[in-house]
Length: 321
Image (cartoon, rainbow, N blue to C red; front, side, top):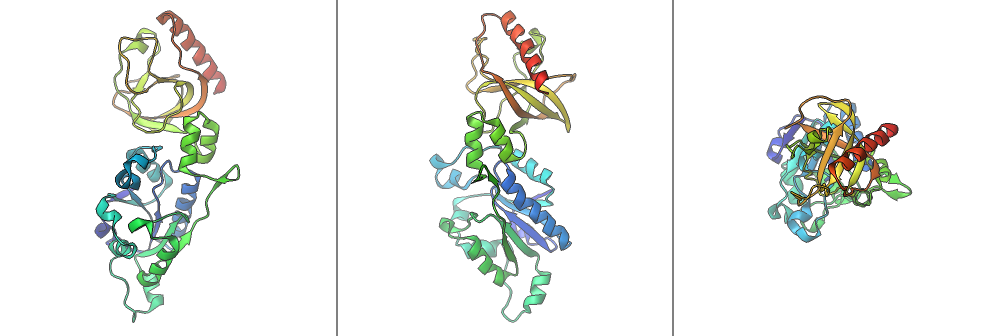
């Protein structure tokens, strides 16, 4: 997947291009409908499927105190987009300068000059590099979010592209949104989150060295300091771990390991024991998928008592798998 950061680069692409627009936090089922239809249309017309998105949430610049916690990091969002099958991403830096652009200024910045009035519409449409834009009906662009899909379609008449609004996906009779998924994850409603995402909620990050407690307890763990803003409640979970495109079952503790008080972390640490795995994971990027909550994080009277409980956690998780 190609990643571009400047519209000038995007304008040099050979056409036709079908473009999906959105922030795509979490890449839930609604987002995937937009992407799937974009890819399908691009293949129909012998073109390429691209995504237009921003490097940060607009509210992170415009109103930081109102910016929502995000379901995934930028790195993970790009990873999910790549796995969706799109050909490329136009990743724009969201800045105050960009935010104050009028809607048509933004479209001109994206597309270049509009076609001349004396150009043949049929010819222009068939040769336009940007053939089509697909989005949800809530997508906005330009100063004060004044640009709507309807206004975008009007600009399309001048710039040579058509606009398709993709219907939203539903779960339990309501529109699927990143906001609903954030609440579900934080409340520990993993089944609801998975149903809206189309996959288990996960953390994808780099394994770092811990304090070696797992080795002393004969339960080696891969330790991750999650950078995502949204995590389920602290506790022990049955998980599936993806390492180098291979999947392993596992048990993970998300929390601050309260049994050992010598060092108390400021933020939750994800410590994962992979079943039937042998190898060195330090420095590797792994994805830990939360499948089922087994219990709360607890304080144990001794390391021996914790070891007994870990063995029981592994048994409980094995039953789930």
